[in-house]
Length: 140
Image 1: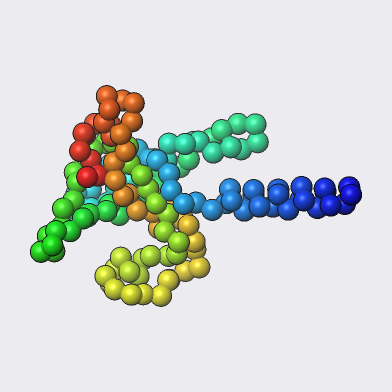
Image 2 (image 1 turned 90 degrees about the horizontal axis):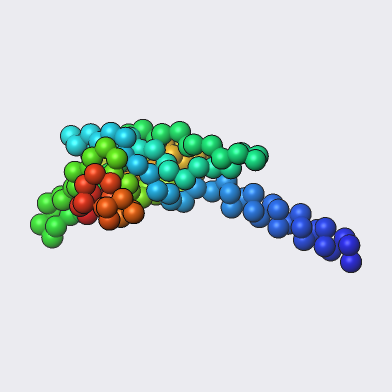
């Protein structure tokens, strides 16, 4: 009986560690926005555990910003401001080839769920005056 319990605890701990290692999405604050390139430098806002402490995440630089497109193909891209809060999504695989070519591409590296493949997808209202930060319509 004790063997089953210790085996289960080991499996549960391994599963938890695996889940902690996968990045999917998180809230981030815009540090700088580059409208000509439609990219932003962002700072993840939820600290991560390190032993008994919580540490700030490093910034993620040059994150592509999501745009929507009208039926005629016209892009509609939000103007972000320093301090705006948005959601970044970590793509499953290295997306550099697709972003460069605009078409189907094999990944250039084996990286998965990396900050190098984050995309800023939209503004998120916060308790700060009911906006996304400095701009009431960022990311929309």
